[in-house]
Length: 290
Image (cartoon, rainbow, N blue to C red; front, side, top):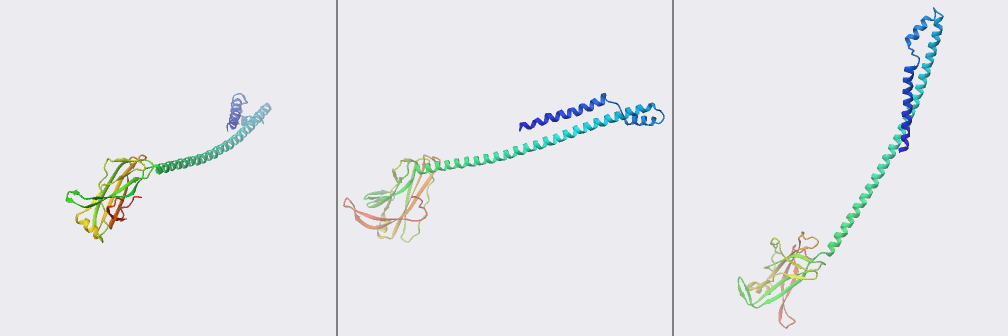
């Protein structure tokens, strides 16, 4: 690009020559005007002495014409030089413009590639964190028998207790774990109930990987126990666990289960005692736990 700037000093020199020649002939050249030429031409017919003046006039006119031709030639040459310089400058600008476009396209491609690489890295990190996070899963039910249950309604010599069990099947601790459990008895042909849950608390325990937690036992007693054994009623037990992970401590995760429980007779347990056999079936839409 810089090599084309040689044209500009050349152009300045030519214009300086042309202007200098104009001033030189104006100051030191023959001072000839059209009026003096006309007056000298009128005197040629009456006096021979004016003949020499006519020669001088012709000579001055010739010099003037020669100077005008030289100036015109210099001006034409300078105009051609200016045109060449303009064309070269335009070509240089076109090259710069094409170079800028190519650079912009390359930078845009590089930026898109960098964004794609960053997004892929973020997805990989999220996938890694997701695979390593805590995961509270359903782990069956704990059954209990009572021969002396004391409740707000009174004292009962026989009762069956059921409590859902939860287990952290993930690879990192679950923090601020809350387990809520409730139960409702319904007719055997009654609708599936929808359970309302209390708002989350701002406290809870920690459950490490491979460890579990259990809800509060829900007891079947009194008339409900009799109807339950006869198959006239079934019990719906609901449990919900709320927890957070160490990767997202501000995000609350929730899992819930809803099972119907039906009596299916007695069987002899390992210790020789007769224990109830219960059938558990998940029911309703409140089943989001794995």
